[in-house]
Amino acid sequence: MDCKRALLLLPAYYDKHLTAPDRLEFEGHIRGCPVCSKKLADVGLLDNAIKLTSEITLPLALAEGLLSHMRRHDLRYHIGSMKRFFVVKRRRYYHYMVAFIRLVALLVIAAGLLKAYFWFASDRRTHDKKPQAATTLLLQKPLKGKKAEPGVESLPTGPGTYTRSDKAIPEVVVSGKQFTRNTIGDAMINPTILEHCEQYTIAQVVGLQNKLVAKVAAKARSLGEDGAAAEQSVKTALSILGKPSLPVYVEKARFENKRVWLVALIWNTGGPSVHLTKVSIFAIDPIKHTIVYTE
Image (cartoon, rainbow, N blue to C red):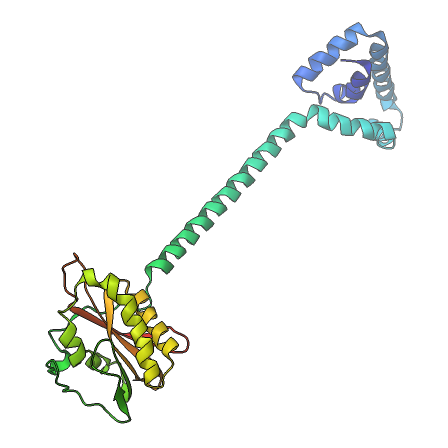
């Protein structure tokens, strides 16, 4: 310890505020330094002089207050106090600061983990949630007790025009029929669908799907409709179903007072030799190309 640091610690030593290691180091320096030893003795003489005045009207407390006032108004005292703060108490406040930083870091990490967890959970729910699942129906069992044999139309056409391109798949129809949620399944009791439900297998889907989609566009144009919109509606239905499937019947009709393309897909799952004996029908908005309803 040098004299400069010893003089800085002198008030703290005299007031018994030094820690044990600093006090031992200070006392060792005082014993070996005559200058600092004299300074310490002067402080002691000042203290004794103040105590001797206790019999005078000036109280000891007032004298100590006067000495404290003199110290506080000395610039060097303030500088020394600041240095003593970092010298004597730096260890304690350093530990407090480190503990606080660790606590803040743990809170930030915990908040980040929670945010990541909720983000992944929300993303997983979004991917798992489909617009509307297609219903698995067997074509051999017509809905609502109605019967339809290949080549025989047993369903009423409803009001409005009813024009078709031809009976070869994919059959494209423009009708004024009004469907509801209770009657949209009737569109699947169709001779074209029933006639071709067992003629195609999963192995044929790869070679036929794109060709049939292109034929939908061509037949829609021949009926004076927007072929691109019809084609995109079929592609939307295929992407929603997401299984080996072929479009066999496409009808432009009304569903709950909205013009839609009804797209009937025959499909199945399994090996290449499995026939496409299941059907799903989709109501697709021809402008927004979004699903309106599926049966």
